[in-house]
Length: 112
Length: 113
Image 1 (cartoon, rainbow over the protein chains, first blue to last red):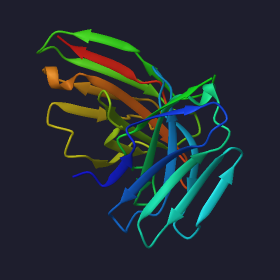
Image 2 (cartoon, helix red, strand yellow):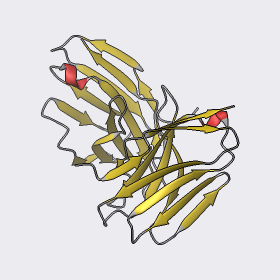
Image 3 (tube, each protein chain N blue to C red):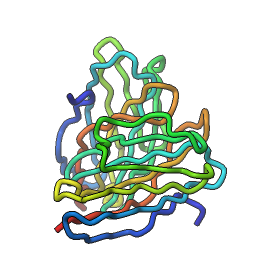
């Protein structure tokens, strides 16, 4: 049972454009929603995270928008750069520790 | 580099053999996690330790899998009688109690032939 649904599966964006990745969840017990960035051959790296009592969080070029009533959240990457090309995973956590349920990933390619 | 370290990075084994992976977490982190990632998928939770105690195991962790963290520092994950379906990236992560997130190692890629 997939508890965190992620789309699109892949995304091609031109340099300077906005990359948008969407996720939806089912379990209302989730209390923390991190996004991870993964480069080939590397482990996932925590990028940015949000709690459900906040509607938006911005860190540099990365913004999470969170809609609690719709059980949806999204990652926006502003001014996308070729170095942002990676696979992005949304995730959701329960239990107060870092057991997270990951989405299926979005492979982002930023072309010059 | 004082990040999470995993060894080996790659392992090729024949079906039926046993394999063991090691994870060294960030030194002050008391929580340690094992995840499995197959190609094109997100990581899936396998098990979690707080200090030396194994507090949760996923249903994905069959009887052939065993994990230990004997002194609350490094951890090992052993797979007995490997099957081709065990081929995956095995990721270790660590965190602090109350920390903002888990830090992942680079993983051990297992190929069962």
